[in-house]
Amino acid sequence: MIIYGTALLAVCHLLGILSGDLLGHALGVKSNVGGVGIAMLLLMTSRFYLHRSGWLSATSESGVHYWGALYIPVVVAMAMQQNVVAALRGGPVALIAAVGSVVLCGLCVSFINRMEPEIEQPTEGE
Amino acid sequence: MWEIFEKAAKDNGLVTAFAVVGLVVFVSGAISRKMTFGRVQGSAIAILIGLGLAYLGGRMSGGTKGLADLALFSGIGLMGGNMLRDFAIVATAFEVRPEEARRAGWIGAIALVLGTILPFIVGVCVARAFGYSDAVSMTTIGAGAITYIVGPVTGAAIGASSDVMALSIATGVIKAILVMITTPIAAKFLRLKTPRSAMVFGGLAGTVSGVTAGLAATDRKLVPYGALVATFHTGLGCLLGPSLLYLIVRALV
Image 1: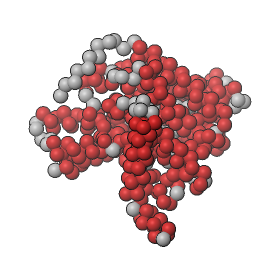
Image 2: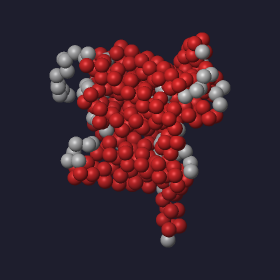
Image 3: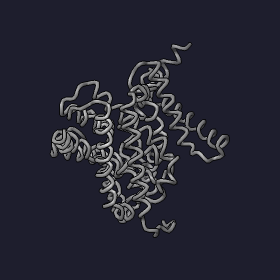
Image 4: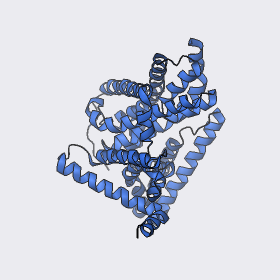
């Protein structure tokens, strides 16, 4: 049943967000701390165990894959509701601070990734 | 006639959003193939068109949520809102290979810390250079350079004025948009090829929206790895911003 996959995804999502909120509360922060990340870890773990015990049929899996595939359209919809007008009105302080941090972080990403050992063989397993 | 059409679209907001986004993605795919011969990814073009529409929507409605503020397109707000965005991000974790994620764990954490501190320093320095010399304003603008959620959360916690908060949000939004647009262009320079590199990127670039949109436009397979790290970004920023970072700035001023 396709709904099993989607329900598994939903349960992981909710548990993750809940833990993130609780973690934020425990740390005294007014925000969710890594809820989505925790949900992702939960989904990866439950997939691993359900797969091993053979409880996850291909049809159930497609209930998750569908939402994963909808990711890009969702991002496009997200882009459509950014406050672009305010971003452009922010003036030089906002622009320079944003450009500066993006450039600096980009340099760091490039630097760290150049240190990555070249053991990445395209092992197209599975 | 128009009223009937508008009512139908309004009453079926989410369905309208699916149709509109599908159309935009289709047009972007065609532009990618016909005009750039596949050199620019269709999803990158779709995101750019989305941002353009967000500008038009914001101009027409005077609201803060781009196209979603127009009644006709209110469903966009649901489709691209936090709930479905996070739902779809979590779903992409299904394609993550745990051993890859584990191997990059520590470097992802380092990137996360750097990605919180470096933008903050840049933001604070720029704020200072433009005459904001009090610790509260400098911290708030610096926090906005981390993500556009960290900015207002920090500002509210330490009592920043509303114009500084607005500036801080604008900084974060510009940063997210810049990451969305520049990632596919700079992908080669950033060495965005492997899951590990995507996790480093997710930690340093911050903002879930910027990271995931940027990676989606670069290589869809990398999205979950970047998101896995980036999702801790806002939490870490909200944790450090009003506490440690604010105390350091106050001590220095």
